[in-house]
Amino acid sequence: MPKLNGVHAAAQISREFPQTRIIGLSMHEDKDMAKAMRAAGATVYLTKGGSSEKLLEVVRSLFTAKPRS
Image (cartoon, rainbow, N blue to C red):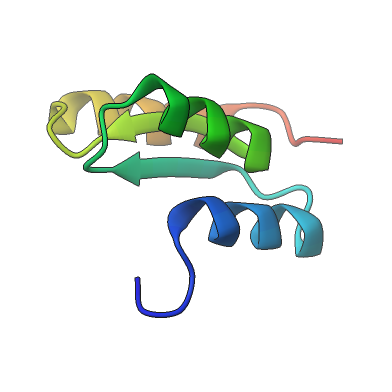
């Protein structure tokens, strides 16, 4: 991303829109990156190498889940 990395973007989105569910999607398979994304506010962290079925499953589950409070 040209101006922010995913962790900074997730943190900013979480601050400005706390009820938004964020799916961190990255090329990095590093556990530290997943941890950083979750700490920044991502609900879920997936890698781009994962299956599209898993991404769809996560999107559907977050869409039907109760709103965050």
